[in-house]
Structure formats: structure tokens, C-alpha cells
Length: 400
Image (cartoon, rainbow, N blue to C red; front, side, top):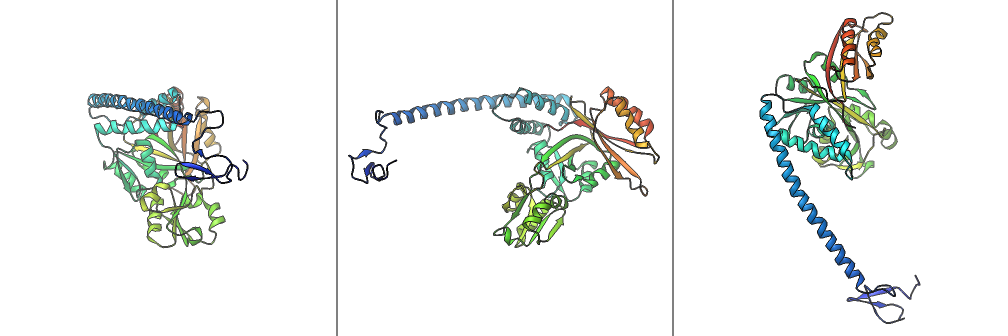
């Protein structure tokens, strides 16, 4: 633009030229050759279009509410027909969600569609019974977030201070299900979960994969004011490079959970916690640095544990634990049935057996359900070879 000729100031509802060139011109004046009424007409047209869209949304909301009520009525009827059978059917829920993904034409991503329908399912299950879900607490842990992701919010999520008590809650009937971490993509297996799975009668009913974003949370004025960092040991390990760069001299203190770390950070001047956003919101902490995990795809896998056997869903996994004789070629022989019947392994991990020095158990995840013919044949042959074999459960694979 030309300096001086076009710069102006506003006086009342009129625009006055600063240079003194030309007569006053209306502030909403259209470009030369245009109509001064065009912007007003455009605003009016936009307002009419906005009103039409809002009216359409209101009508759709009424229709959605009607359909949700019809769905809930059918869910209630199914609950009565099932009698005392479990309200939670993981294979059925997985089939419904996969079908919705296949039909989803956008613009909502599949993740958003899953979140909406998880809540619908949660509400319908609650009409049959309010389920109690045990997890490693306190509130605000990633286990707590995994409960919400898988079961929705209309459940009674019950925190327990240790893994042993989480397992015991379901074993004793205090809780209907448990959600426990089994492995992290950065730090590997959660040993206590695997150890407890050997002894428990609980079965794996489902799987949850949770993207883990670690944040530095504190009420300190800034990163430079942090004097100590609390977190769970695995979370500290997941952020070790970031901590070395930004807080190299600050003590790192491992505690029972990230939520406990957030509680401590909220109560101590200069303290910070590494935890998820949910923990920060619960304990009133500010985010000094977000997404500080060293691996950008940091993901934790959880198992849903219960007392039921899950039917095939069409895309399943089977987990087992076995022992192996201490002789050359023994592991190769145990794996041979899987190769013979075309069964793929997605995980193979050893763990000390705690029955003797240098004795190990092997935890294996298979692609497929125990009732699928290839898997069933491989497991039957494996049972003849392994000194100890325990099926931990077949369950729907987590949604992508």
C-alpha cells in the first residue's frame, strides 16, 4: 500500500484519511466497482447457512438420541435373555467396533468413532450391572487411563496399591475384572504381572494398547526451579535421555506409581513428577514440559483379566507360559509345532522360574484363538512336549 495515502484512523463509525487526500469514506466501503451492500449480504447469507447447519445438527441429535434409546432397550432385553452370564463380551464388542471401522467414511477418524461407541457400550452394560474394574492406583495412573479407554467411564474403577492386590481383588470377587500392564515398547515386560499370571486362575479376556505420553509436571516456576523428580521406575527409564539433557544434576526418585509421583510433587516445593496429563489435572500441576519420552511411539500394552473364557472374535491372540527341559535343542523342539501348523508367534520372552537356579519359564503370544484349528493342533502337540504348559487366555487383539 502507499504510506500516507491509505493509512487512516477511525472516528465514530466513519474512517478519516490521515493524509488529507480525498473525501471521508465508509469503513465498510467495497473496492472500486463493487457494491457497498455486498458484505452485509454476505454476512446475512453466512448467518442463514449457519442457522441451517445448526438446525440440521439439532434434528440429527434428536434422531441419535432416539436410536441410542432403542439400542439400550435391545441391550436390556439381551441382558435378560443371558440371565447370569457376563454383561461384558469382549469378542462381541471387538466385532462391533471393527465393523464400524470398516464402514467409517469419515470425517471422524476411527479412533474417535471407537471412543464414542465405547461410551455407548459402557452405558448399555451399566443398565445390566455396574462393573467394578481393579487397577494399579492411585487415580491418574496410565492403568487408570487404560480402564477408561477399554471399558468407558460408566464403570466403578477401583484403585489398589500393588499388583498383588489387583489380582487378589478379582480372585476374591471384590472386582469383576482387572486391567494390568504387561509390557512397554521401550522398557519391555512388567515382571510382576508375568509372575502373578503363572499362579493365578484368572484368564486374559482382552487387550489394551495405550500410547504413553510422559510430561514433566510441577508447581515450580520453571524447569530451572525443579530440585527433584518423582516417577515410577519405568517412566524414569523411558525419559532418561531427556532428563540427562535438561535436568542432569537433579535427583530422580522412583515411587510406586506416576500418580503417587504427582501427589508428592503437588505437596512439596520444587518437586516435579513425570506422569500423564490426567495425573496433572487430578493433582493441580502445571505442565513444564510435554511429551518428554525418549521414544515417540512409546506404547504400553495391558491385559484385561477376568474369570471367563472368551469366544473367537475373528482377530485374536492367545497367550501361554511353558517350561523347557535343560537340554540341547529343547526350545527348538517346543517351537516346532507352531511352524508345522503355520501359527505365528508375536512374542517370545523368558522369565526366571523361581523354582531353581537358572531355570526359566517362556511366555509366548500366538496369532489366533485357541479354538482355531491350526492353533488347537499346535497346542495339543506342545502339551506332549512341554514339562509345564498353561494357557493364559485367548482374547480379541487390541484395535489399531
